[in-house]
Image 1 (cartoon, rainbow, N blue to C red):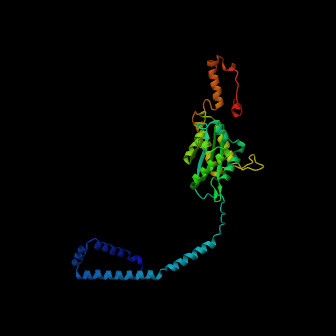
Image 2: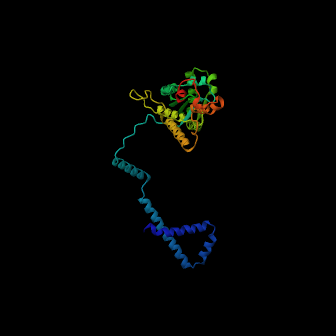
Image 3: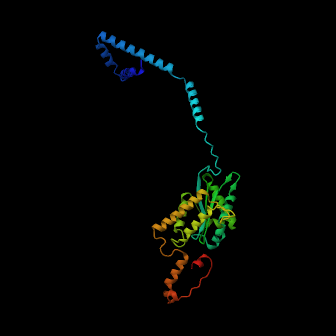
Length: 322
């Protein structure tokens, strides 16, 4: 007989068992007593047939069932057949530049906010030397177990010197110490002479600092536009391939992490200037000087600005802008 025929009867037995378990045994007994003998014999006979059929069905399922070993053998044979039917995919070569751990971004440097000109000059790097300086830092922080500072980029201007770099998360403090020591070596300044003027930010704080710089919020003249062009130059240098036929002879040391960070800073700087009026008015030290001269010429010299002779002391970018 088909086992499906016994499902309703099995369900009925389960319900009766639930009645017994739920404490309604007395009610069942009373029901059995109320049955006539012929009815009772009929119920018992039906239950006996049901149990016999159930045992036969279970035995049939057991005889037709596969052992666990047989099942495992069949699955293995199916896997082998499927593997043979599918062409073998070529294995991907292991990437040499794969990131084995989480990376964290940092920035260390000094600016017009706290460092005097004579200290800033000790760290200043000409733009043509930015990549060479960054490569020197990467190699300086190299150990037998790998690079402590695998990525670095330089931003050096009249009013600031900043190193943007990335390091494995577990080597964060070692990386910061290496960069600090590298700056002392390059500047020739002792820890007592340099450290009071240095700032250092990591993670979100480093990114927020970059956003403030590229937006002109950290500049000597609020909203100056020149710093955004300088951040762009920093990004371009750090991703440069380098080579004899390239404009940049020394390759950049920015890598994916620092390059992405700088690119985000450029994007934010553009958005700030597009959506706000931060760039309205004086946008550089040079333009601020000219505006001051024009506003004070009548008051101080009793002459209009067009009649005033101006002498400029100094040289470099500010003089060319004037």
